[in-house]
Length: 510
Ligand SMILES: Cc1cc2nc3c(=O)[nH]c(=O)nc-3n(C[C@H](O)[C@H](O)[C@H](O)COP(=O)(O)OP(=O)(O)OC[C@H]3O[C@@H](n4cnc5c(N)ncnc54)[C@H](O)[C@@H]3O)c2cc1C
Image 1 (spheres, rainbow, N blue to C red):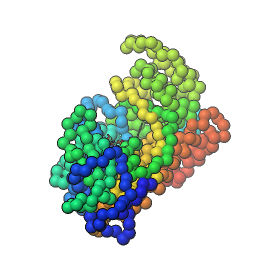
Image 2: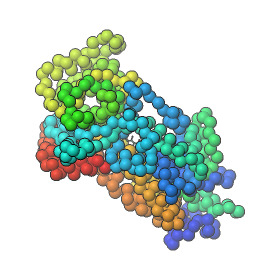
Image 3: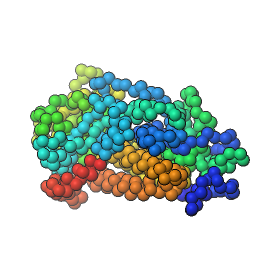
Image 4: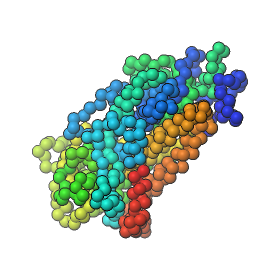
């Protein structure tokens, strides 16, 4: 942890009222002497977590008058005007739990979301590709026929959510609000005591610069009573606060794509029920998941080795679709064989892909389960991409005048679709903490104020990140040995005990 400044002293005394003295200095970058603009809350990062915090602060009558700023390297104007044809979907999609959705509703952001592009699902089919043991998460057992089916999660494009949050923030007016887009935080340091101004020696002061050649109207320096790092995995705010992280790289990639699906073979019961599918493929490095989008589309997240990811990305659309269909249907040996098949040097549209014919032939000899997804029939052009998968957890989420939220605080394996949900949970908790402080005349940046936030979130996030990590490790042991047997026993037992299953589903529900 970094050297602590006077703001950590008890009892609390406002830093502006303290006389200057020698302080432990913290710094990320170089120093300048210009007098900075002063804000109550400065949030670095305009991803879903940072914008969620800003929207929450603006939505509450208690915190709406705080002077707040948000700094984002990217061009937020592009995010505001993001628009895709109704037959196309972004490949960055998150499954939002009902508690994330209800938070977004509470702060008025959900009304700004294009809900025609979001898709709820009520059922999950999860099975082990090695042992075939499975677990069905289906709310229809839990609800009466007269109740609406309960939602497991709502698939939402990240860009749709970001646009909704920006629209909600702009609806709150521009009084006391500054959004500096196209602006990068180039350095952060502790301020200094101004001879005829406030004592900022315990306050983070940020130096801002236009991103690349972009236009930015940001001041050169701003000071924060509370600095929030919503600035992603490589968080400069976390570095400034000298907060360490624990973690590792999984040496796996998440291959994502937008797919179109064939009509399901049978009408789902109850009508309108949508299902998410996940099959663990231990010999290929992780699970493949197909999550529903509107109009018979789906988003794919296939966690696999970097080598397999590079292979999948290099395939023609036909071969890629054949691999996805194979991954939900074929035995592990068949799949491993197809993952090593030679790729043709050039693929033309009428070329009969060898992966496709291999799949057709092998399917004739493979009995099919009834819980598999409909066949993928198309892949949206340009939607296949791969992201490295990592685990990181900050040792704490707070430091004097600093708080971390979202991926700046934790990055987890996406196999349970929880990363952004944890970030939204952080934002809900931190905004409540700030609200409480304002309501009780406390300093929003004081450690005493912020302790409430880290106490509420750290252990919860550690638990969920740990479970995802354990599942990743458990489902990466190939073959039919004792680990696979233990896995299948675990899934079968859970599947037969409605009480335990209900508990798990409620946890997934958020
Ligand atoms: C394959 C995959 C699938 C996933 N699926 C799901 C899912 O189904 N459900 C789910 O809940 N989560 C999912 N996640 C996780 C989710 O995408 C992330 O947790 C979430 O996007 C993180 O949001 P964030 O706002 O915390 O960070 P980010 O989106 O990383 O935003 C950080 C922002 O900070 C800005 N920034 C950084 N440095 C600076 C600087 N110096 N100055 C100014 N700005 C800066 C960046 O430009 C960026 O916009 C998935 C992740 C992956 C990889």
